[in-house]
Amino acid sequence: MADSTPRRFTRRTFLGWWMASLLTSTVVVGLAPILVFLWPAPPKGQKKTAIPITLDKAITELSPGDAVKFDAPTSPNSAFIMANGGGDNAPGDLAFGGFACKDQKGGTHVFAINCSHLGCPIGLNTTDKTFDCPCHGSRFYMDGTVKHGPAPAPLSDLSWKPGGDPKTIVVDGIILGF
Ligand code: FES
Image (cartoon, rainbow, N blue to C red):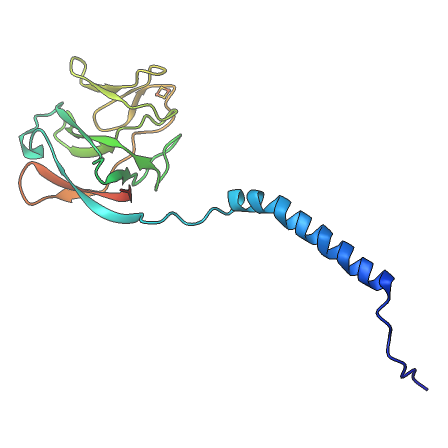
């Protein structure tokens, strides 16, 4: 026959629950900052967009071996999205500048400014017609391929299309915030 006597809520039971809830809240309070760090809230106000850029010179006017540098807008704060790449660059990585250029064969390119070694901004070597990295000496041909290491991979392309006038190109990017 089953015991129908109601179980008593003893002082020991109460203290057990009290200790358990105290321990749980201590652990939650202690872990909360770590969890927020591991799973940060999605950034507000960021959105992918096509960014119109006005170049110093129209791409159609570039001679083979010519390049023009451009920067991502800062108001609102924006960045370009790498279309490909290797080494330190990867598709989806952000770049805050780029070069539009014509290689020696007349091919048109729009590159992210980041060296594929460790991401330093490359510069145009107008004498040798190369892109050179000041950090560790990597050099790139104007078609983006590596001329001299330690860069392990070509420059990353940026996805772009012509804009409304000859000096404007529209580059895939992201608005980071205001
Ligand atoms: S970052 Fe360019 S050579 Fe190292």
